[in-house]
Image 1 (cartoon, rainbow, N blue to C red):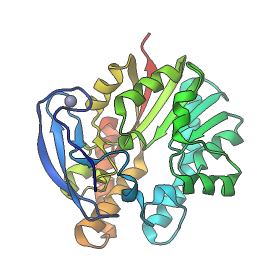
Image 2 (image 1 turned 180 degrees about the vertical axis):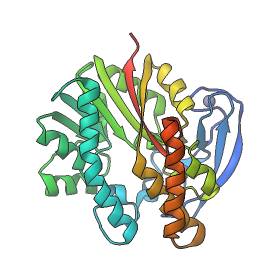
Image 3 (image 1 turned 30 degrees about the horizontal axis):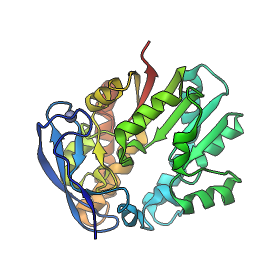
Image 4 (image 1 turned 45 degrees about the vertical axis):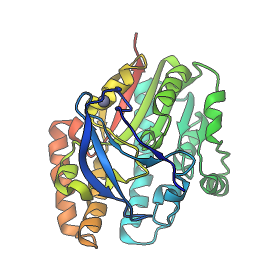
Length: 300
Ligand SMILES: [Zn+2]
């Protein structure tokens, strides 16, 4: 039997000014539908009545859930894998630029099959990679000889020991949101940098696809951030957002998936055009990008 988390208050700001905005379907695993709520105080959206941490496991069991696998079957997956290789380098460059370090100590949370950890290790960073999924950890070991650790190790790291902490599309999956963000603050060096990438429901592609928008990804995505909601969350834990960085490819990828959900099959030309439309908007305002990388520091 499923144990659900029913929120009476916003999980970010605690306000009771919350209400339903739409219903989204789980297209990848269960085909169940979930209500998405909006907080009119901090602008966070969140999935209501999600399975709790002990019961969400089965919702990750899908061959199509590609963040944990390396299959290159199907056009969308193939494209995803190709672009991922290119984005690894740009992530590394971003970290080096924002920390001002060529190499240092990195904590990567939710490492998946280890590609990013591998990229950083190859450039002499000392990396601790945490990943909850045992199969993904085994693939990392097989592909790169990398030992990823269980998530419980998050609570056993030395305080203020990391120059950089990265969460690439991870924070939206975490049940213990406030405890996590507090721990990120604890583990970050005084002048370290925290990088959080999450989807942005205020993007143009979200507005176009509405309840079919692939980045709702219920019930796996517990929270749906806007730049404003992220700002409120981060400042509650003594940190501040320094920069917003775009993830250009996400608009195309999310549009293609959304199109598939909406029409039963991805309309390639249309979804490419919608991805482009979203990115044009984001060129003038990065806070409108389909996914945003938040570059975060401790408050002085
Ligand atoms: Zn709120």
